[in-house]
Amino acid sequence: MKQFAPAKINLYLHILGRRPDGFHELETLMALISVRDILEIDIISADAGIEFACSDPALSDAKDNLATKAARLFLDEFKVSIGVRIHLEKKIPVGAGLGGGSSDAAAVLRAMNTLTRTEAPVARLAELAARLGSDVPFFLHPPAAICRGRGEIIEPINLRDDLQGVLVHPGFGVSTPWAYRAYAQNPRAGEPGRAFADFTLRNDLEPPAFSKYPWLPTVKNWFQKQPEVIGALMSGSGSSVFALTRTADGQGPLTARFRTEFGATLFAETFSVAKRIG
Ligand code: C5P
Image (cartoon, protein in one colour):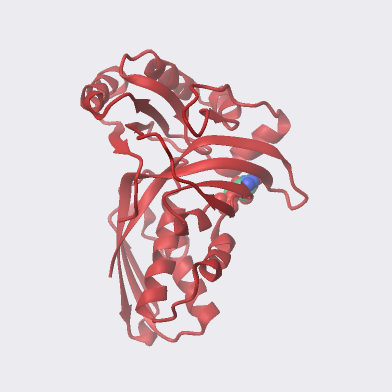
């Protein structure tokens, strides 16, 4: 069974405070984008266990992987005795604040729910999803939602703006636990950017990430000066930065100019905010 696992961007991310469990209370607007991983998930014999292969050799360790953890959790929780083979074609940069691993995990839960004819309701899958990571439940409620709590309390919304742009990644990641720890040591709101119909761009994890990684504010500022761009922001805990463009027309030239300015081999992809999954 083939499943698409889209990335998300955070159009705003407000940190409301520290919780007794060590996590941070959030309000964040997440939206799926057209950049996506592709998974092939099949049932195999029970004694084969969980088999995993990935187009990115760095991610081929089946034990330390959200997709295989999701498969294991599903089998344990619903007491299903089958084996599962997962092939992951990785297109979403890793450690990028794009929820790639979380989206893969949600795709595995969805596929297994169908393949095993368990047909658990979304709320039940979301409960499992929250155990795998704070933003995994969002990927079961696409395409855009305001997420609160740790990120697991989901209020789906319809975005009024047609959004598209360019997404870039520097080739290094930012550790999410580090970003939240650094925020906690020096809590500062992110700088608000342009206001759209449903949101104002802002990410409270920018100040800590920007002070440690100067590439990030340099790229954001550069984007904000380009004529096609109507707003730019770091996504999640970084390290990817997205620029929203007025129309889809400017995306190609903007991507090319970014590569000339910052490096020809860097990840730079045009994207649109997904209207529906798949
Ligand atoms: O839930 P997830 O594994 O994505 O979170 C990674 C880390 O990010 C957590 O261990 C925690 O340090 C931090 N975090 C947080 N508050 C959140 C989400 C994540 O402090 N709402």
